[in-house]
Length: 378
Ligand SMILES: O=P(O)(O)OC[C@H]1O[C@](O)(CO)[C@@H](O)[C@@H]1O
Image (cartoon, rainbow, N blue to C red; front, side):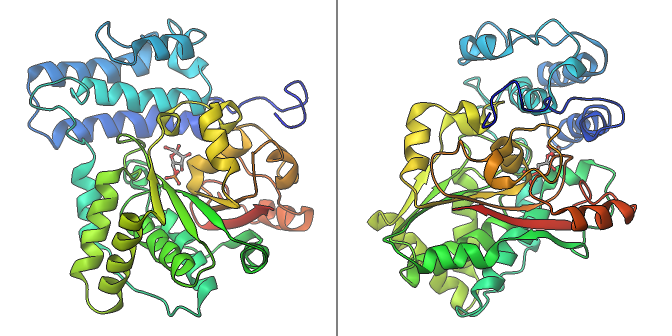
């Protein structure tokens, strides 16, 4: 951590008063049930899903099965947490492991009939079908940034939570938007990284922003970081990117032109795709491997999308909310900006006056998805 491990606050856990507890006790079992109910899985997968639900509720956390291709890696990562209750592992850690176990239970990594069949595709496809494709005018670049930010509300994990309708009424708790644009206007050539979060509506908005960066020449290249496999229900994989491009192509007017430009940019190497294994690791970016650090270090700006990327960027720790974002992210190998709707406890870089009025509002501004932020360390 930037201030040294000893100075950093504790990782957020699963205290009954915290958000992790709700996810562990309410959202996770619901999600398992939904996945089970929405697919014609055979008895083996049904048993595995039921056993996983039971294990999370009351059993010790088990390692991956003997034949799992990534067993050795997870054995190393999980040595401190296996054979203990799930609630003993940090929230950031266990939730990531949960998605790995869910994929294992449905046979995603096992050659056979369910090999590489995305258990969340049902929800992702429905959301993409219902998404409207509205292309803001090119000169409205702040609107593109905000659309990408609020697109982050489209996190399908919320389907399984207790949240009601999402709205953006809370506005931004921090807004470095002008700073982001002035950094892109200055200097160059810019090589921008976009670390994607959710598929569907959010990725459509991200693609419009990327198209703007490339078309206006603000960025010479954009590297889009996707997930190597399904994760956190709606996180975007390459298959989801392809679905979004098809959705744009099928829409009228400017949207179809956006698709043509982006596909050409992919073909010509100006829009590069990445799906690093670390993107589904249970750790914050402090532990990213050297090749990924080198990649981020080569971006003149990395844009981190969404709540989970924010948690991984600042370390999912109990930071006082006024801790400067620049201080907490000083370790990151290059300029970085975060676009996020707030959907979990952690936050940094909120000024004291804003913080006291948010706290006085009595609402769940940290977790309800009603507030957003644009933060940058340039
Ligand atoms: O899609 P996002 O914005 O990364 O959000 C992921 C969500 O999943 C959670 O981990 C809860 O399941 C929250 O922290 C967060 O709201």
